[in-house]
View 1 (cartoon, rainbow, N blue to C red):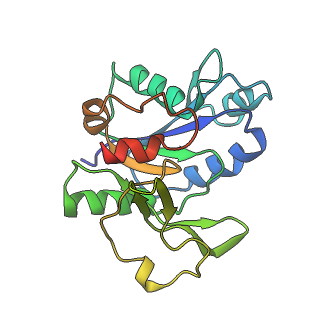
View 2 (cartoon, helix red, strand yellow; view 1 turned 135 degrees about the vertical axis):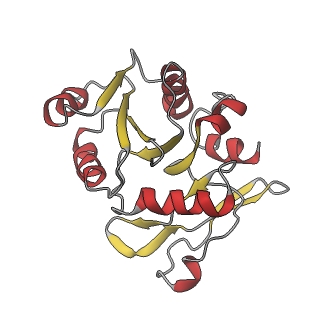
Length: 200
């Protein structure tokens, strides 16, 4: 039986962004996945839009905006009663390839499940230009950068590789890893929480 993957999409006032994201998620070619939209107290009707147009998708409505780390940590707590084996964290402004989950499962089978995996990410308005193909962390100079950013796509960016960190825009791992690391550090209010969890 194929492993169950829960796709977690954090949203805050993202009505316009969310629909294309969810439409792409519906086209994923994988037999055993479900979706949880975590809403950080939106005021733009985006949660109502999800419930109306995507009734099969689960929603977690939070009472206020807890930010990236806090919002996802609330969802990890929520999932503890019925934890999925794998989770995919996905920004609400992304569109995914239909093969994304098969690719992550293939990577997990090759390298083991005790890891954090990420995907290659392109600019939406320039789909052949890379936004992320790996993360580079220089702690000495407190510098964080994306491998391949603004470069045209090529074969060298398609080879699986070990990287310093996975961007929280598209992050695949097990609930076991998340629980072991106690989720995100909420002292990182915006940016850096994905780098921190990967370094830990």
